[in-house]
Length: 257
Image (cartoon, rainbow, N blue to C red; front, top):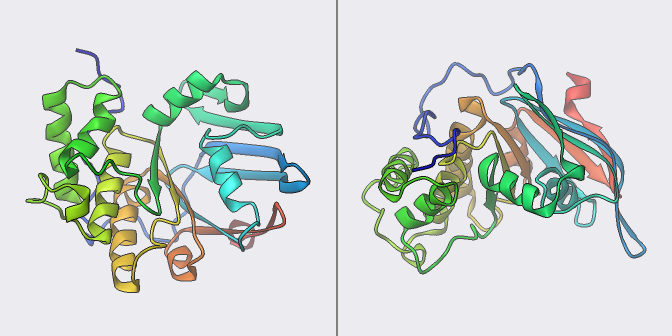
């Protein structure tokens, strides 16, 4: 049996639990650093020389109007697309890796093992149960099925979904489905979670609950979270906010700290 070394059962506190990490705490070190990123689509400039560092254990919100470049930036940082120019370095104890030089196969492996994803619509498999959706992420890393399902069950419990493991996605509420997506993003031990409008389809009360769960599973447990959002209430709960306009960083709250 093979197993990804980062695979784990939840070390994060249950949503709503008290932790020793304050919302505005500073976290030393950088896990991901982008330098002078550019990206164009025809005549449209999506990124115009963006530089940004993601710190270890921080929750970073990226805001901006539609077309500002925020989603292109997130997709570049996550290795989903390759910028036209610039550098993206992933830092770890063993050294740094340049993501823009990686093949598509290596970036795919990176997304499977080092990164986790939570999207607005969850992107879950409707034909699978909640447990199977979460366990599949671990199994794709080579984890044996029984062990993967055990960890999936623990993550679902940590997300407040104990007793719902056998439900298919269509049998869950929108907020419950997003909690499944958060569990799936973390079961492999991902160091960085990317969330693209994770609360965009939810009402305000459910949005707050989902953000509590997402923060508990990521930055409050020492992992990094990068979230694209239009919602100022979501951004206000993060440690840092970057605002974009016309493919550039307009403002970074870290510079004012």
